[in-house]
Length: 175
Image 1: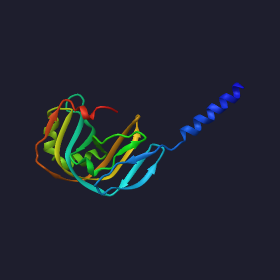
Image 2: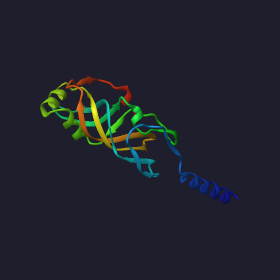
Image 3: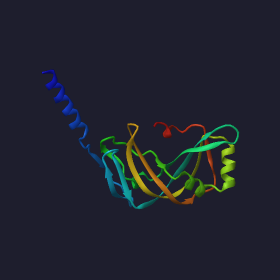
Image 4: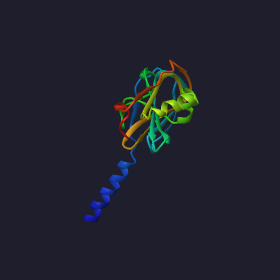
C-alpha cells in the first residue's frame, strides 16, 4: 500500500511539473511580434525593434585603484505601453526595467572614451544618461524565481550629455 501511494504521488508530481503554465500579455503599442516560446524557462522572444525614451543605467563594480567592471546595464522606459509584458499567468510581473545585454555597445553609444573615464572616476555604482534608444531582440523569461525583461540596444538619440550619478537605485534591486 505504501508503495502504491508513493507511486501515485510521484506520478502526480511529474505530471504537474511538466504542465505548461499560461502566460498572457497585456495590450502594447510597440512593433514587437512573438518570434518563439520556450517553456523550459518560459522564455518568449520577439522580432522587430522599437524606439523608446527613458534612462539607461550602468551598474559599475569597482575594484582596487582604477579597476572596474560594468556589472549590468538597464533601461527604464518612459513609454511602458510600447513593450509586451506578462500581466496574467505564470510569474506575471509589470515592466520596471529592461536589462540590456550588450553592455559595451550601450557604453560606446552613450559615452566617448574620455567621457566614460571621467564618469568612472566618480566611483559611483550607478551612472545614467537619458535618451531615445532603439531596442531589438526583446525577450522575457523566468530566472531566479522572478520574471525578467531584456533586449539589445542598437542605436540612440541622446537628449543631452549630462551624466547622473547615484549611490543607490531601489528600482534595480533584486535578483
